[in-house]
Image (cartoon, rainbow, N blue to C red):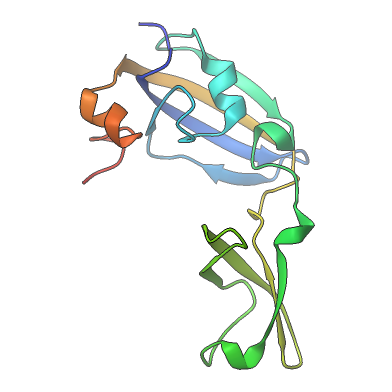
Length: 158
């Protein structure tokens, strides 16, 4: 079966930065629902469209095809008094952006009585190198399409 919209793709991957530093090694295969459901990086979907089980590729993804460009409007300065005790650099918190959507923020710096937060993905703005192998391709179930993600082994569990 060829990879197309509404197919579930199971793959293994290895991700590194442009200097070859390992960022993630997917030891366990991962499944995603293909076709614009935002379950994987846009560059992976583009590269795998029309491919089949067994396909292997080495990809170089520009930021636009990976975690996006950095958006400086996602930086926030919040008074430290607004946080519970123990807030630490590198910690992550959920908040809302100016449109009310859920947003994950990473504590970048604590400077005096101010906490600097960054709502960008930690890999935003970076070019990524990926090695991917398609382990399986199957048609998505009606439930998977309705829910917008893969279910079962290597996918989302309810």
